[in-house]
Image (cartoon, rainbow, N blue to C red; front, side, top):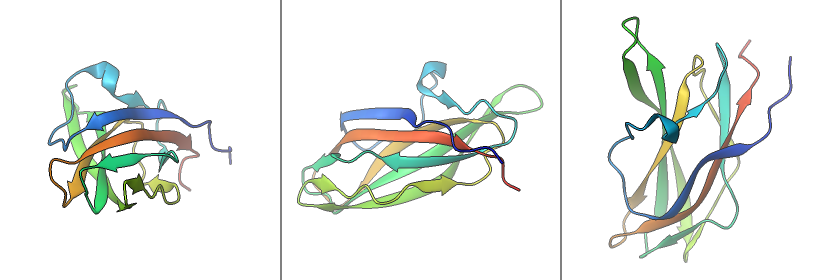
Length: 131
């Protein structure tokens, strides 16, 4: 069994408001680059939320190719991070399910708040294929 790879930036957020879709731009997605892999994701310490949300919700998306080579995008996890004052509780890293060598992306949403925004970095790393 191989060890986890190094952490890399999945996405850096700078005062981003709630999002409802994933981008069409290929360069925004992070390729896991493996035929069958799991990924571990985390919020880097120091993340903040403005305008009083009680939590930040990060939705993780995978993008694969269909047999017709068209992109197929689906949500694989929603992770809620409580907010204390303006500090986002990064929590512990979360392991996403078997992603089948797909690309990965993350969007942000909120619980409560008035036009809240999120500033912080989300990282990911590939793990060994599931047994």
